[in-house]
Amino acid sequence: MNLNQLVNTIDGKIVAQNGKVNNYDMAFASDLMSDVLTLVNDNIVLITGLANLQTIRTAEMADINCIIFVRNKKVSKEMIQLAQESGIDVIECSYSMFRASGLLYQAGMKPVY
Image (cartoon, rainbow, N blue to C red; front, side, top):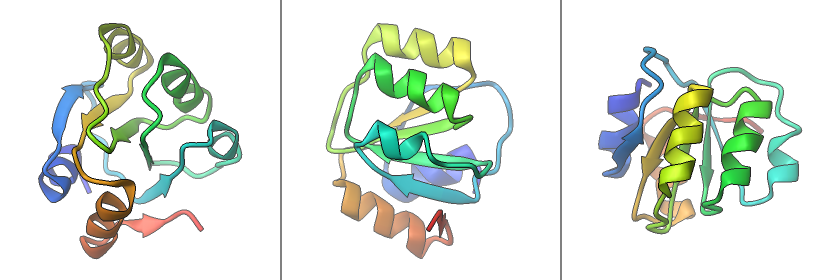
């Protein structure tokens, strides 16, 4: 699933783009960044409601190239800047984590576990 397909599926809004054409195969939903650091797969979309700089840094360390911030969380200018420097696509979404995850799963996104 490419970035535009992700956005259309969850009625999201792109707030940062990495400039690459990535196809995302799997998604992982969590607000616990310690769980995110255990991931070893490629092309993962992180679905989270934890909107702070640490989330961007954690995604960078875990080689995650796309973050969806759910529950209508707003991304700060600092977060956008760090995401762009780190090559991470960032999407804002008003849906709950459960609904966004379900819609992505229904559209063919695979779970990590």
